[in-house]
Length: 327
Image 1 (cartoon, rainbow, N blue to C red):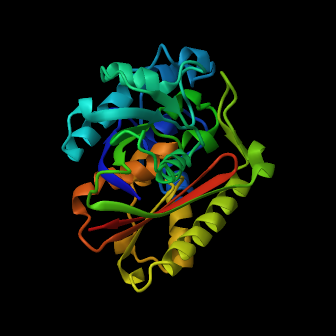
Image 2 (tube, one colour):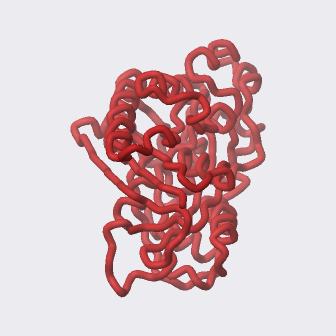
């Protein structure tokens, strides 16, 4: 059994609104964006003047134009999660990080985050693109060993706007930056209990979503959207079938790819608007951090008896599902 003790999130302060994208003169408009993806605002670690002047034509310059490193955004989200868990940071026995865009190939990003937190503990990365949070929970839920630390910190620093080509309106309208964190335990109980996990891959589609090293994000948009809708719907229905009479209290958080995709899933799965939690309209697609930042922003609102279905899909192609019960 795995328990979630606290969650945290961080979004940088620089905003990329639809008007800003219009001013880039890349053939987009507020109406076009709202109609297709339902996103109004995004956050970025990048300097806005840098985007306006260069459109990030050389991603190697993006690090210098960033207000924050992944390690610093990871620290901010982690501090919120640790505070909500009601523990001291010295009780963390391991740090696991992962997402789409680590800043370095080596070392593990978890090491850089732990250094910011002044922790000396085992640190590893576990990356599964946008489904990384689901992968973290799935693998940790299978651990049942006396050597597992009481509290483990998992972090997904997703500052993906560094990889966006701001001459490409398909990508520019989607991406925002955000970081999620969670404190979990296999030993110490809490009000949030992970009841089921799953992770599945279809590697034949590995090249449908790609961020090459020092290159720009690229995807086969229509194929990926269809995949995301299909696999999210199947996973939600599978979770609901296992709830044994609790289906009416099921809440849904999906991968924050775009609002229109999520709305399609809700129609297919008969999820009402008051059961659907999201933030993609104000923060954009924040990759692996998307779904867990939604959970973090609503952490205080979950009540005893709530069952949360979380589904994350991403490159690989990989999709993960979680059901979390609040007691």
